[in-house]
Length: 489
Image 1 (cartoon, rainbow, N blue to C red):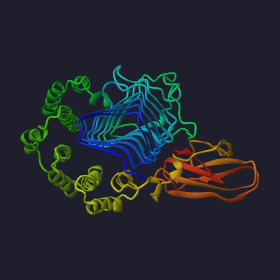
Image 2 (cartoon, helix red, strand yellow; image 1 turned 45 degrees about the vertical axis):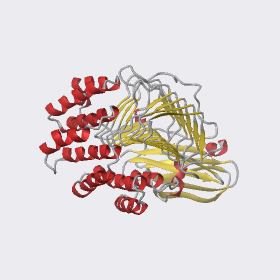
Image 3 (cartoon, one colour; image 1 turned 60 degrees about the vertical axis):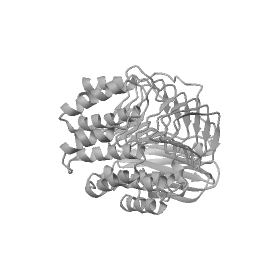
Image 4 (cartoon, helix red, strand yellow; image 1 turned 90 degrees about the vertical axis):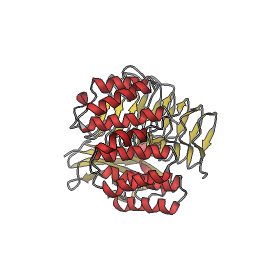
């Protein structure tokens, strides 16, 4: 496996008509603001496209069957994504982290099918895959997990899309108590029927539980002032948006709104290729805040992104160490400070020893965290199939029709506390039936051995388990299939 094609601090350019496969990451863009990625076939890599502080236009590509993410955006990346087929990617079709915004210029007509999760937003990220009449007409369906997942202060505008059924199943969307998903005005039919999934990959979906409600009043959060500033931002009027967000930050009393406005101020500076954000922070924001203030920590985190963009790596590391040492009570900020320290040392300072040290600290405290997995893929170049805590069969198993017929399903689903899993064997077979949690940890072996031809039913008792999503994996010979079930207590 080779490393892939790396564009670092590359301004304008075009990547077209390439067939890229068997790479750690097919395309890596760091600090590349205006590239065009179109008409490529990106398949069978560990990851498809990785964006770091980059905002390319991604159109008319096929991004298939990658072992991790189809498109992975972090560190204030903001790609425009339209008319792509993104299918069969094991973790997520599109994954966004650390103040990235997926969208811009009305992203439309993408087909995201049969991925682990369709759209996954994490840690102060946003997506605009249908917003106020702009964009939409995307087909996002048949994900192994959620169609859209938003966690840790993330926001998803996904209006006017097709979700595989009408009306869409609310259980296919997840937003934690700090995040928001607007999936209003769903389409009643598939707008992209000719953009079909790969015929060689078949992943099964069943319903998950109801999406969690939020403690935040989102109608109040996205008030008229924020919406007006966002309209300027999405129209490309970044100076006007900057002026509005600065006013909003100054007058606003609510912490969440101030934090959001400050993040958008940083993004406006980034979009204008303006290096004034650090001066803005040091002249107008940081002197007015206590170093123990959470907003002070947010400002340091955003300043880290500007230092990274400007190549001031010593300053970037200094900010991250302050966050790691002084703000460890904020779990997500602490985890991201360790991940980013590993990222800077591994990718920019070529110090793999230090990179492993910080990633090791992260793994020691959070052994099953997605950032550990991401770090091993991105920084250490490991293949997802090598991770002991991940059950690779969840999303990238190639199935035959016969094994799909053998595993019939479970009933009831959702269940509390017991459900029965049934399977049928056309001939004498060596089989195994296991249950896993969402982190890939084995919960129980329900069946293991040689079974005669016939129909079978096995009970799973979850009396001592917490509510949530669980997976059951059935293997017969060389074939394997995984389905979901929901425990609701």
